Image 1 (cartoon, rainbow, N blue to C red):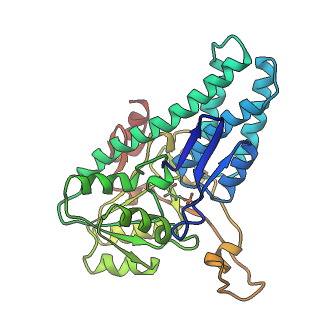
Image 2 (cartoon, rainbow, N blue to C red):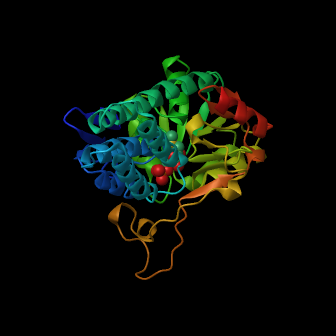
Image 3 (cartoon, rainbow, N blue to C red):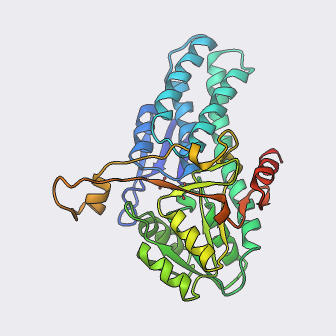
Length: 345
Ligand code: MRU
């Protein structure tokens, strides 16, 4: 199944990613507040998947609303958007999807509230369909950068599970594999939540794409010893100047890549490009609970009461970015111009 789906009986189904790879569990929600909790607690994660979840949650909110006029439905939707918008601050796809759903409600030509609800369900489904189509296009552009025999390094999970299907960085890897290029992928485990070890490894192994899991600290050694040819990662928000916010640890990879002459490409749908933030310094960075660091996988690894800083994302300044793969082509420096062109294309 897809990462997230609308069920015709009016519910949202999603894979509970907290349980992977040990258990494949699908959860079902009929209340938008439960979807908000699922986003915050990372049943579903990854910027485009968070956007799709938010869109479906808005469709649920419309169905749940007892409104009899378009004005009161809009008021209920704004309340839902506030609840959903408070879940995870860095992934801009969340706010992009909420705004798109609010615009769809405002622009609906339906004669009554029932028709508006139907329009909102269609809009959410459309967002999900577009996501897959966009990922396939990014896969095609990005795969042109991959040579036969390449060793590719990736971080976190920018795969099917981070999107509705197919992935962003993993779309490039999937496409290169489908083109019969003989590739091998180094997968960073990605502390503290281990999205690389749990999710990316699971996805690549399911598809038979050759891969090796590494502890995060191994990447520098591999780069210095010539074992990495190219790096593809995702992004949660990319600023107008090409600074890229992504999973904590991405910045360190990009600096080491430049030092070792290795191309570094974030793979970023235009819904993740936020032209309203001039630089990465303006991107809100999420901090999460200490428990994620002290109890990885539920197992305590640090003393009781230890002080912890758990920053979930970092910003890679654009000078370390070789190019940014989008669904409209690959943006190269100067990013201020090229990213705008990609967004407006
Ligand atoms: O905290 P997460 O798991 O939501 O972080 C996900 C990432 O950092 C991904 O790289 C990013 O969302 C891009 S996914 C296509």
